[in-house]
Image (cartoon, rainbow, N blue to C red; front, side, top):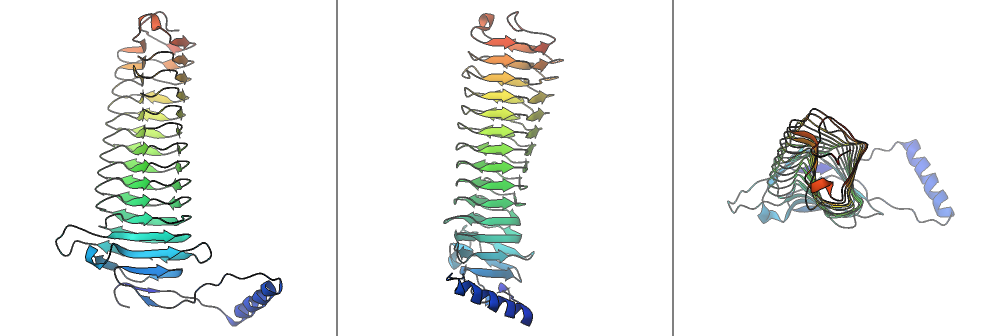
Length: 378
C-alpha cells in the first residue's frame, strides 16, 4: 500500500445479504425511500484531495503536505443523508513547509454535515482540524500537535469533540466559534494562547484539562456557555477567564495558574462550586457585575481568596470558603454587593475586608471569620 492510501471495506455474508434484500423490499413496499451508501472501494489519496461521503480508513501517513498542493491536506465532506467518516487508524496527517515560503495547509478540513474523524494525529498544519458547513460533526481520539494556528477550529454548530488533545500550537488549542457544541474529555496543553477558547453561544465544555498554556486555561466569551468539571493547571493566564455575559462556571478546579484561578469580567455570570488553590494571584477576581458566586473554595492562593474589583457591583457572594490566602480571604472594593454565609480564616492580612468607608452600600451577613477590616462586616 503506497503513502496516503485509504481503503473502505464491507464484508457481508450470504445470509446477511439475503436479510438486507428482504428488508429493502419491505421498506420499498411501505412506500419509503431508502438512503443508499456509496459502495466501498480502495482509494489512493494525495495531498489536497477531497473525500466525499462514505467510510474511509487511512492505511499510512498522509504527507508531508505543503500549501502549494492546496489549502488543505485533506477535505472530508458529508451530508445528513450520506455521512462521511475518516478513521486515521493510528496514522498521521502531516504538514510541512517544503518550499520555504513559511506556509502550510489546514490538516483536515471538514465540510457539509455529519462527518466523523477518529483515531490518529495531525501534525504541523495551520489549523489541525477545521469544522465548517452545516455541522453535526464528530471528532474523537485525535491528537493535534504543533499547529501554526489553532489546533482545532470549530466554525460550525452542533458538533461533538471527545478525547481530543491540542498541544504545542502557536495560538489557542481548541477554538469554538459555533454554537451548541459539546467538548468533553479533551485537553489543551502547551499552546501559545489559551488551552480552549469559546466565542460562540450555548456550548458545553465539560471534563477537559488545560495546562501549561501561555494564555488562560479556558477563555470564555459568547453567551450561555457552560464550563463545568474542568481542570486548569499551571497556565500563564487565569485558569478560567470569563470575558462576557450570561455564562456559567461550575465544579471546575484551578491550581497553580499565574493569572489567578478565575477572572470574571462578564456580567450575570454564575460561578458555583469551583475550587481555586495555589494560584500565584487571586483565587477568584470579579470585575463584572450582577454575578452569583456561591459554594466556591478559594484557599492557599498567593493573593486574595476572592477579590471584588472597584468596578464590580450588585454581586451576590454566598457560602464561599476563603482560607489561608496570602492577602485577604475576601476583599470588596465595589458597591452594592451582598457577602453572606461565607467562611474566612487564617488569611495572612485579614480574613474579610471592605475598602469602602463603613462598607458603604455593601451588606455583610452571617459570615464566619477571625479578623475583619471594619465593624460593619458581620
